Image 1 (spheres, rainbow, N blue to C red):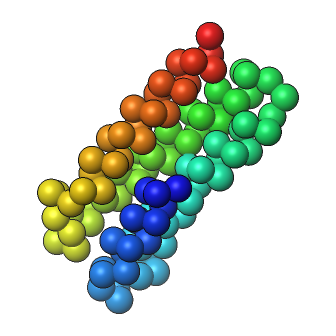
Image 2 (cartoon, helix red, strand yellow; image 1 turned 30 degrees about the horizontal axis):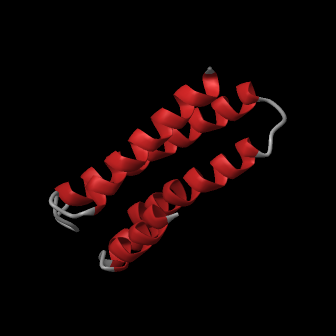
Image 3 (cartoon, rainbow, N blue to C red; image 1 turned 60 degrees about the vertical axis):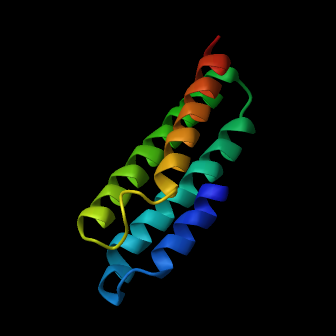
Length: 102
C-alpha cells in the first residue's frame, strides 16, 4: 500500500496532459495490486490465492512499464526511489507466490 501512496504522490507532479491518460493508468495499476491480494487472500484455497498473486504481479509489471514510460517522457527520473520500491514489491510477491504454491 506504500507503493500506492508513492505512485499517487509521484503522479501529482505530472503535467495536466498526462492526468487522464498515464496518471490514471498508473494509479489504477498501483491500487489493483493490494486490492487483488486482499481478494485472493479471502478465497478458499491456496490455488486460488496463488492465481490472484499472479494477477497482482501482472499489475506490478504494468505499473513498472508505465513508470519507465513516464521517465522516458521526462515526467520523472529513472533515479526516483519508487523504482527501488517496485523491485522490492516484486521480490515480495514472488516469495509469497512460491510459498503459497507449495
